[in-house]
Length: 408
Figure 1 (spheres, rainbow, N blue to C red):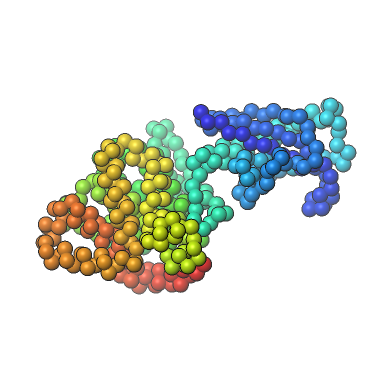
Figure 2: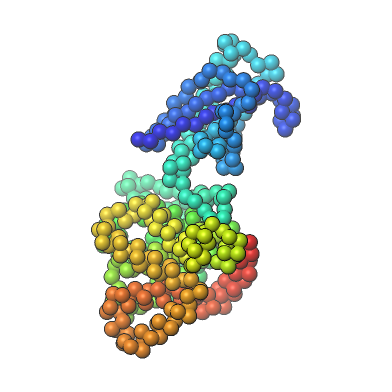
């Protein structure tokens, strides 16, 4: 049980030119809520004068507008709620019946379901919020799908219907159009594709995964891609994941892969560019970005991608039931696969692959666990740059996007 506290601040009485000269009432409130529930307790502290904000606090840009209610977070991570309500120019005295009536009205206004829900959502974000490299004002994309809970307790996604489910039946086809899937799923291509592949490979039953945690995992990964990035966004992640699936589902390869390796590969493809800032490594190094200093100017973006992906997977709790040895192998496979997507290592990887292919047969390579992991690295690397091999209608769209992606 972790409580959090918010300060409710009201503008002091006076003329506001933005509001046409109307006056505003001013009262201070403190709200305490329990993260495990949705009830909020309200109490009115002693009246204050002067500035309408608590001492030493400043408002930042994380703001959620509501009708008559304004929610923001100050520099100390405390939520502030401002209620704006027109009152007579001459405000009543604090001990008058009208003042008590106004207080009661303000309580009812704060206790609106939408306001309480937003307070609870923001309170959780203080504890489990994610970071983003170059987007300080990045707003997490709100979920655009709704859930229905039938009597049998099964969650059904309203957007995962008809055309989208029919299109996913052809996910093993190389001509698969990820842009169409993104349109049919209302911008949730990576989410639906990831869940579908876990079901198709039987990973949910094999590892006894919680379906809701699986949905949360892909939801976190998808939300951590920047929608403002024209190329390295969640559509690109879905496209790479589908290309990787096209190679892995070949019978000659799939029969040698373990379930753990398949799950590692799918999640590595889904998170291989997570939180991509839209600029390349030379730009980060040249501008002395903190990520470049953190990773010593080596595979800066790839190191950031695999670490962020594993953090999000841990946050979802998807693999909480995995054995420690399997979890260690899973994270190591994800790490090596995502690091292999570094374009500066392309000559090194291709040379190693040619040498391995000259020494061993295809069956011998796939029968060795270490060599098999290297093959997965090559598969993800090829999937990451698969766009020129797609049909022209799809390839043309992808070829036009990088020109807008590398600009700061």
